[in-house]
Amino acid sequence: MEKEELKNLAKHLANPQGDKGIEIGEMMNATNISMTLESARTLLIEDHDKILEIGHGNAGHLKSILSLAKDLHYTGVDISETMYNEARKLNQEFESQAQFVLYGGEKLPFEDQSFDKIFTVNTVYFWKNPVEFLNEIWRVLKDNGTFVLTFGQKKFMEKLPFTEYNFTLYSNSEMEQLVSKSSFKRMKISEKEEEIKSKTGDETIQRIYTVLTIKK
Image 1 (cartoon, helix red, strand yellow):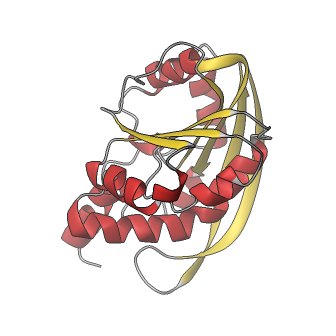
Image 2 (spheres, one colour):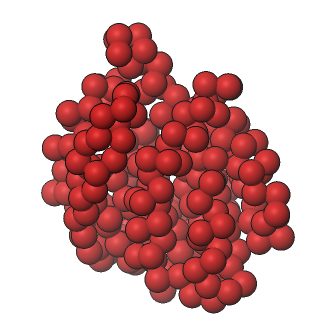
């Protein structure tokens, strides 16, 4: 891919827009599904939990999340109006259990201690003020709740040609340092590896990613 194509891909990965954004959203859901479901399993979701996902994309995975326990209540937030509209369209059958919220990316529009479980997959690279945003997550998480932060490791991500454009990459130790500067007190790291299709072509690559389980 040419430089401008890579820049455009990076832009849509951060904030999908328009018809191209819908296409990118479908691709992201396909390439991220194993990370998303691994994150959901790590949350140990229980009946009646109130769940928040930060950066829901097209939420093609919602049915799988809601099947993990009974009487779940899901909220997704995203900065992309395109993804907000797509998620609502694709998940109309779950509107009694799920809501989607468009937000600005910095302040979470919820009251303190609103959620039992919170997770986010492949969004941390785009956080403008990561420590402040972690404190926002801390604020809306219940005292006995769990937050799962899942991200591609720096040593893998820096090999991808589009991540040089407005991505902030983290190693495990850098992420631990970041979380330690926030109000969160405890974390557990789990490393995963999988084979996926590249976002820039048909080749397969080995992705190394981290699932970070974080507690107050």
